[in-house]
Image (cartoon, rainbow, N blue to C red):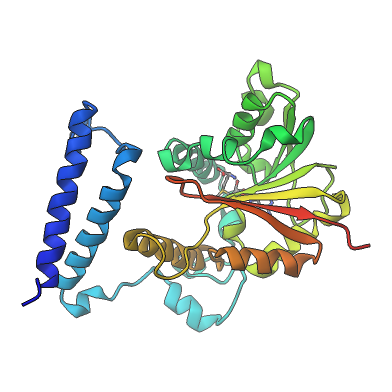
Length: 324
Ligand SMILES: C[S@@+](CC[C@H](N)C(=O)[O-])C[C@H]1O[C@@H](n2cnc3c(N)ncnc32)[C@H](O)[C@@H]1O
């Protein structure tokens, strides 16, 4: 008789956990625990074994659960989908129903400075996680080939990633644009050595662009807007784009079904669903990103895609060629 699936999964877990522990022991690292001083992260060398354990534990867990317990609900999203089917409006979401408001999340934050500051701090906290390391941005796009260039960072928040770029590439100037309430201390928070190269401007990216930039950079923000809004934001950049300018997106790239570790795909689809609940937006596959940019303007051509090992986000580079 073939080995039953649950036994096979248990064996995978056991063998892979042993591999992880061997690497930790060899590197003199702590074994995972819930202790106060526990290490927060596992080294990249155990990634494959870690994926195997997480996939197998997740499947084993599901196989041993009773079917009714597998039905999940996500705050207000079903009610919102029934009330506003197919809506891309950020004011018609599960978040709105749950909070009894017609404000979008961003409008809600704009009216609540304390919550806006907390949201900004949460973004900075994410940047401390290895999978959001700024090195994935600085080392996986050829910024140095741009020479002396101006980057406009749309939705750049408190400027953390803008400063990382400016620190590493001395020829770059980065203009951070965001809602004023999201910018934290803005220029007052820029270290002396970067002053003049990292600047801040309050700007809603649906309004026509005002900076003549070589690179327009969106990081982790287009996923919070539905397609029609992303298209409007991209169209708003066109008046200032020179032929050959780039639009660089560092954002979630939704995996195609069945590609890559199962636990990652499950997390990605769950995050995609929470974007619907919060923003009426979604995550996008490489093809979705391409379709979105072409819908904004035929002049956008996808030039490169990077999905660095260990990174939560990918980098897509579009070049814009004027069709006039
Ligand atoms: C999820 S946060 C990411 C912040 C930052 N880009 C990062 O990677 O840490 C999204 C950011 O986009 C900004 N944003 C959203 N809609 C915007 C708009 N219409 N115009 C300008 N900024 C916007 C938000 O204020 C927020 O700072």
